[in-house]
Length: 251
Image (tube, rainbow, N blue to C red):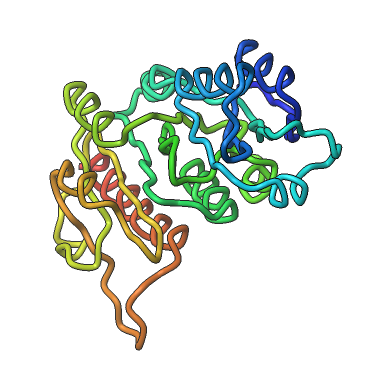
Protein backbone atom coordinates (compact mmCIF):
# COMPACT_ATOMS: atom_id res chain seq x y z
CA UNK A 1 0.00 0.00 0.00
CA UNK A 2 1.35 3.42 -0.89
CA UNK A 3 1.19 6.63 1.07
CA UNK A 4 -0.35 9.95 0.18
CA UNK A 5 0.53 13.09 2.07
CA UNK A 6 -2.53 14.25 4.00
CA UNK A 7 -3.70 17.72 3.13
CA UNK A 8 -6.71 19.82 2.24
CA UNK A 9 -7.44 20.41 -1.42
CA UNK A 10 -8.99 23.82 -1.99
CA UNK A 11 -10.49 25.42 -5.08
CA UNK A 12 -12.94 24.18 -7.67
CA UNK A 13 -10.56 23.07 -10.40
CA UNK A 14 -8.18 21.55 -7.84
CA UNK A 15 -10.92 19.40 -6.30
CA UNK A 16 -12.20 18.29 -9.70
CA UNK A 17 -8.71 17.25 -10.78
CA UNK A 18 -8.14 15.43 -7.48
CA UNK A 19 -11.22 13.30 -8.13
CA UNK A 20 -10.30 12.63 -11.75
CA UNK A 21 -6.72 11.67 -10.87
CA UNK A 22 -7.98 8.97 -8.53
CA UNK A 23 -6.70 10.50 -5.29
CA UNK A 24 -8.68 9.08 -2.32
CA UNK A 25 -10.97 11.77 -0.91
CA UNK A 26 -12.27 11.21 2.60
CA UNK A 27 -14.45 14.26 3.12
CA UNK A 28 -15.84 17.15 1.10
CA UNK A 29 -17.11 20.50 2.35
CA UNK A 30 -19.11 22.68 -0.04
CA UNK A 31 -20.71 26.10 0.28
CA UNK A 32 -24.43 25.60 0.80
CA UNK A 33 -26.47 26.80 -2.16
CA UNK A 34 -23.68 26.65 -4.76
CA UNK A 35 -25.18 25.53 -8.07
CA UNK A 36 -22.87 26.78 -10.81
CA UNK A 37 -21.21 24.53 -13.41
CA UNK A 38 -17.99 23.62 -11.57
CA UNK A 39 -19.89 22.88 -8.36
CA UNK A 40 -22.29 20.61 -10.24
CA UNK A 41 -19.27 18.80 -11.69
CA UNK A 42 -17.84 18.33 -8.19
CA UNK A 43 -21.18 16.98 -6.99
CA UNK A 44 -21.23 14.45 -9.83
CA UNK A 45 -17.65 13.37 -9.11
CA UNK A 46 -18.41 13.02 -5.40
CA UNK A 47 -21.47 10.89 -6.14
CA UNK A 48 -19.51 8.73 -8.58
CA UNK A 49 -16.79 8.11 -5.99
CA UNK A 50 -19.18 7.65 -3.08
CA UNK A 51 -17.91 10.70 -1.18
CA UNK A 52 -20.31 12.40 1.19
CA UNK A 53 -20.71 16.18 0.87
CA UNK A 54 -21.21 18.37 3.94
CA UNK A 55 -22.92 21.60 2.93
CA UNK A 56 -21.74 24.43 5.19
CA UNK A 57 -21.73 28.21 5.32
CA UNK A 58 -18.82 30.41 4.26
CA UNK A 59 -17.74 31.01 7.85
CA UNK A 60 -17.13 27.30 8.34
CA UNK A 61 -15.15 27.07 5.11
CA UNK A 62 -13.06 30.06 6.12
CA UNK A 63 -12.31 28.37 9.45
CA UNK A 64 -10.94 25.17 7.93
CA UNK A 65 -9.23 26.76 4.93
CA UNK A 66 -5.44 26.85 4.98
CA UNK A 67 -5.05 28.99 1.86
CA UNK A 68 -7.90 31.47 2.13
CA UNK A 69 -8.75 30.68 -1.49
CA UNK A 70 -11.21 27.81 -1.18
CA UNK A 71 -13.72 29.12 -3.78
CA UNK A 72 -16.52 27.49 -1.82
CA UNK A 73 -15.16 23.93 -1.71
CA UNK A 74 -12.59 22.05 0.39
CA UNK A 75 -11.72 18.35 0.18
CA UNK A 76 -9.76 16.26 2.63
CA UNK A 77 -7.49 13.73 0.95
CA UNK A 78 -6.59 10.44 2.61
CA UNK A 79 -3.13 10.10 4.09
CA UNK A 80 -2.90 6.52 2.82
CA UNK A 81 -4.54 4.78 -0.09
CA UNK A 82 -7.09 2.03 0.42
CA UNK A 83 -6.79 -1.65 -0.37
CA UNK A 84 -9.23 -3.90 -2.23
CA UNK A 85 -11.10 -6.91 -0.82
CA UNK A 86 -8.88 -9.17 -2.89
CA UNK A 87 -5.85 -7.86 -0.99
CA UNK A 88 -7.33 -9.28 2.22
CA UNK A 89 -7.96 -12.70 0.72
CA UNK A 90 -4.50 -12.72 -0.83
CA UNK A 91 -2.94 -12.02 2.57
CA UNK A 92 -4.90 -14.89 4.14
CA UNK A 93 -3.91 -17.22 1.32
CA UNK A 94 -0.24 -16.30 1.65
CA UNK A 95 -0.36 -17.17 5.35
CA UNK A 96 -2.31 -20.37 4.72
CA UNK A 97 -5.01 -19.27 7.14
CA UNK A 98 -8.80 -18.91 7.02
CA UNK A 99 -9.67 -15.23 6.55
CA UNK A 100 -9.96 -13.12 9.70
CA UNK A 101 -11.39 -9.64 9.04
CA UNK A 102 -12.41 -6.68 11.19
CA UNK A 103 -15.50 -4.75 10.03
CA UNK A 104 -15.99 -1.38 11.73
CA UNK A 105 -19.29 0.47 11.95
CA UNK A 106 -19.69 4.05 13.22
CA UNK A 107 -16.03 4.46 14.21
CA UNK A 108 -15.50 8.21 13.88
CA UNK A 109 -12.56 8.76 16.25
CA UNK A 110 -9.18 8.55 14.46
CA UNK A 111 -7.38 7.35 17.59
CA UNK A 112 -9.84 4.48 17.93
CA UNK A 113 -9.45 3.51 14.29
CA UNK A 114 -5.66 3.62 14.51
CA UNK A 115 -5.65 1.53 17.67
CA UNK A 116 -7.99 -1.04 16.08
CA UNK A 117 -5.77 -1.33 13.00
CA UNK A 118 -2.83 -1.92 15.34
CA UNK A 119 -4.78 -4.59 17.22
CA UNK A 120 -5.87 -6.23 13.97
CA UNK A 121 -2.25 -6.49 12.88
CA UNK A 122 -1.06 -7.94 16.19
CA UNK A 123 -3.94 -10.43 16.27
CA UNK A 124 -3.03 -11.66 12.81
CA UNK A 125 -6.16 -10.36 11.11
CA UNK A 126 -5.84 -10.14 7.34
CA UNK A 127 -7.58 -6.81 6.90
CA UNK A 128 -9.96 -4.12 8.15
CA UNK A 129 -13.11 -2.89 6.39
CA UNK A 130 -14.64 0.54 7.03
CA UNK A 131 -17.65 2.29 5.50
CA UNK A 132 -17.45 5.42 3.36
CA UNK A 133 -19.99 7.35 5.42
CA UNK A 134 -20.24 8.09 9.13
CA UNK A 135 -16.69 6.93 9.71
CA UNK A 136 -13.19 8.38 9.89
CA UNK A 137 -10.84 7.63 7.00
CA UNK A 138 -7.10 6.99 6.86
CA UNK A 139 -5.82 10.28 8.18
CA UNK A 140 -2.35 11.02 9.48
CA UNK A 141 -3.71 10.77 13.04
CA UNK A 142 -4.99 7.28 12.30
CA UNK A 143 -1.61 6.33 10.87
CA UNK A 144 0.20 7.58 13.97
CA UNK A 145 -2.20 5.81 16.35
CA UNK A 146 -1.68 2.55 14.45
CA UNK A 147 2.05 2.65 15.30
CA UNK A 148 2.94 1.65 11.75
CA UNK A 149 0.41 -1.17 11.43
CA UNK A 150 -1.32 0.76 8.65
CA UNK A 151 1.63 -0.12 6.41
CA UNK A 152 1.01 -3.86 6.80
CA UNK A 153 -2.72 -4.33 7.35
CA UNK A 154 -4.99 -3.75 4.32
CA UNK A 155 -7.82 -1.28 5.00
CA UNK A 156 -10.74 -1.41 2.57
CA UNK A 157 -13.38 1.31 2.32
CA UNK A 158 -16.82 0.13 1.10
CA UNK A 159 -20.06 1.88 0.25
CA UNK A 160 -22.32 -0.43 2.25
CA UNK A 161 -21.23 -2.74 5.08
CA UNK A 162 -24.37 -4.86 4.88
CA UNK A 163 -23.88 -5.60 1.18
CA UNK A 164 -20.22 -6.35 1.83
CA UNK A 165 -21.17 -8.87 4.50
CA UNK A 166 -23.51 -10.57 2.01
CA UNK A 167 -20.67 -10.71 -0.53
CA UNK A 168 -18.22 -12.14 1.97
CA UNK A 169 -20.70 -14.76 3.17
CA UNK A 170 -20.72 -16.11 -0.37
CA UNK A 171 -16.97 -16.52 -0.01
CA UNK A 172 -17.33 -18.65 3.10
CA UNK A 173 -17.07 -16.13 5.94
CA UNK A 174 -19.41 -15.96 8.89
CA UNK A 175 -19.89 -12.90 11.07
CA UNK A 176 -19.98 -12.20 14.77
CA UNK A 177 -21.19 -8.85 16.07
CA UNK A 178 -19.96 -7.34 19.32
CA UNK A 179 -22.91 -6.30 21.49
CA UNK A 180 -23.62 -6.27 25.21
CA UNK A 181 -26.79 -8.28 24.63
CA UNK A 182 -24.99 -11.22 23.01
CA UNK A 183 -23.89 -14.56 24.36
CA UNK A 184 -20.62 -14.48 26.32
CA UNK A 185 -17.68 -14.95 23.94
CA UNK A 186 -16.23 -17.89 25.89
CA UNK A 187 -19.33 -19.95 25.07
CA UNK A 188 -19.09 -19.40 21.30
CA UNK A 189 -17.07 -21.10 18.60
CA UNK A 190 -15.09 -18.27 17.03
CA UNK A 191 -12.90 -20.34 14.73
CA UNK A 192 -12.88 -20.64 10.95
CA UNK A 193 -13.19 -17.82 8.37
CA UNK A 194 -14.61 -15.02 10.46
CA UNK A 195 -15.56 -11.37 10.33
CA UNK A 196 -15.56 -9.50 13.64
CA UNK A 197 -17.98 -6.56 13.57
CA UNK A 198 -17.25 -3.71 15.98
CA UNK A 199 -19.29 -0.55 16.54
CA UNK A 200 -18.60 2.67 18.39
CA UNK A 201 -18.86 2.93 22.16
CA UNK A 202 -21.84 5.22 21.92
CA UNK A 203 -23.85 3.96 18.95
CA UNK A 204 -22.67 0.38 18.69
CA UNK A 205 -23.24 -1.56 15.49
CA UNK A 206 -26.09 -0.28 13.32
CA UNK A 207 -29.28 -2.34 13.29
CA UNK A 208 -29.14 -3.31 9.61
CA UNK A 209 -25.51 -4.44 9.88
CA UNK A 210 -26.22 -6.31 13.11
CA UNK A 211 -29.09 -8.20 11.47
CA UNK A 212 -26.69 -9.44 8.78
CA UNK A 213 -24.44 -11.08 11.37
CA UNK A 214 -24.68 -14.78 12.20
CA UNK A 215 -24.06 -14.40 15.93
CA UNK A 216 -23.91 -11.70 18.57
CA UNK A 217 -21.17 -11.96 21.17
CA UNK A 218 -20.43 -10.11 24.38
CA UNK A 219 -17.53 -9.56 26.74
CA UNK A 220 -18.27 -10.47 30.38
CA UNK A 221 -18.35 -7.32 32.50
CA UNK A 222 -17.65 -7.37 36.24
CA UNK A 223 -17.32 -3.66 36.99
CA UNK A 224 -19.70 -0.82 37.75
CA UNK A 225 -19.93 0.54 34.20
CA UNK A 226 -21.22 -1.40 31.24
CA UNK A 227 -19.19 -0.43 28.18
CA UNK A 228 -15.64 -0.57 26.84
CA UNK A 229 -13.87 1.77 24.47
CA UNK A 230 -14.28 0.40 20.90
CA UNK A 231 -10.59 -0.31 20.43
CA UNK A 232 -10.35 -2.11 23.79
CA UNK A 233 -13.42 -4.22 23.00
CA UNK A 234 -11.95 -5.06 19.61
CA UNK A 235 -8.74 -6.19 21.29
CA UNK A 236 -10.46 -8.40 23.85
CA UNK A 237 -12.60 -10.14 21.24
CA UNK A 238 -9.80 -10.41 18.68
CA UNK A 239 -7.52 -12.22 21.08
CA UNK A 240 -10.28 -14.59 22.13
CA UNK A 241 -10.48 -15.48 18.44
CA UNK A 242 -6.68 -15.91 18.44
CA UNK A 243 -6.88 -18.15 21.53
CA UNK A 244 -9.56 -20.36 19.98
CA UNK A 245 -7.66 -20.59 16.69
CA UNK A 246 -4.48 -21.66 18.46
CA UNK A 247 -6.39 -24.21 20.51
CA UNK A 248 -7.98 -25.66 17.37
CA UNK A 249 -4.60 -25.87 15.62
CA UNK A 250 -3.05 -27.75 18.54
CA UNK A 251 -5.64 -30.54 18.45
